Length: 130
Image (tube, rainbow, N blue to C red; front, side):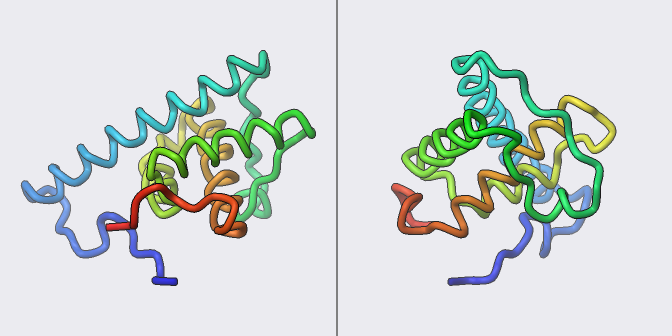
């Protein structure tokens, strides 16, 4: 398994290439937030409040069994759409840290990324990572 390299690791901030790639990551973030919002709305569950504890930032966990099923559905949806866990890491890196709502998305996105990474046979992406 290749090591994760952040989307901006080899880019210079402010260059046209950086701005182009950041716009692509922002578009992916909107798509992933749509997926997350859809599954929470469909289940009639509010997004969780972001936990600010240091432990939660490493491996968030769902608050209930119902929420665990939501995360599994989101991870499955992402895998079917070819969204790799590395993409989830990328989009979570540009989430507004000061926004409580975005923090809730980050918690779910990082939890789903961990789920996909820890169970690759269950969440094999439809397309190879490029």
